[in-house]
Image (cartoon, rainbow, N blue to C red):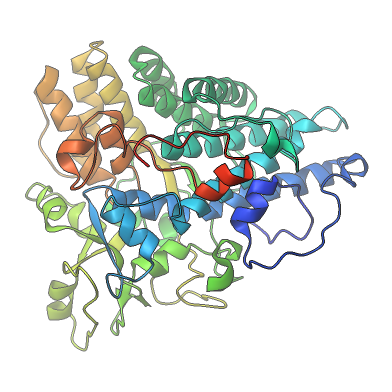
Length: 488
């Protein structure tokens, strides 16, 4: 579904309120929970609250873009070395607890958690047909937001079926990430058991999405046998398949296709501004990724952030059809198309993230660089196949099956089969994930969870940069009781 603007009040944790504020001015607000008992009296009210939970998915554009920049796939780019300092700091692995973008990720993801918990706190209040489905969707989304939080920050405050309200910052503690992962698993098992295989409304989460995310959660914890089993259920369901035409996946006509297991929906019908980026209904990252001062066919101009490196371009094998879909070589494009012009930005490599740069013809209501309709393909079937391949191989379960899954992805890319086994097969799977998923925000976390980040990312410090710092203001709001992540 293309998410509608949220017009009703949802209850947020005070930490989230501060983190998400578009202004430093304080305003008088009504009690957070004074109307709670008067809400959730009908299916319509549950559905409106559920739309509010989905709405925060659109803020994950920052997780995707910054996650890619943190890896060795792309450089920060931008206009200059001081353009959006928080992004430049992450690129150089010198980020601190006052980084504005990390503060946004913390705040926006906790907003999603709190909105989900608002529903789950009152899940038994009113009976209606389809209530179980609403609860299952909210439970999946809570798991999704918590997975983002634990990936980025490690130990985080955990709240289950209750909102974090004003005053809770004085008593709540950070929960060990192992316990957060355990709750995520519980949530996803519940969601998978109660969600339908397909949804009538495009964009709502499904059984397959819950199973695929659970497989990823298992993989992040090296629970290879469990990952293989649940990912096989997704693969064997017959619900998903690889799209034959790889060129179409990231175009408008490729949205919500048979390869899409879970997709974040964006629209260009309602925009926002820099004073409130999370208010946009569009994919903000698409404008940030765009070609600076571009004039020419097919694409729109942008801010030239998140530029692919020569190293990752060279990682593609000869004749790999994915290369030109993932990467736009702007110099070659200019030669092929007369009248193309563009500006050279900071750290210009000559390459752009072609999957997520804006195309001509979009409405771009409000601001062409902030309101792009390009959906984020959060979990693709190709990702599922490669996760399953890794689980079977690294878990020493079945290298032949791992080869089968890996080679399904390679065959579509018009590449020969891999016949390696053992550690050599592991290396092939890692490489395949990198080139298949380039520009989609996964590589940094893949490097961290497989303990390869220090050898691949310039400036990465082992024992520190596996997670990002807790925003300092959150520690201050908690009365300085929380211990900062090591090294920060």
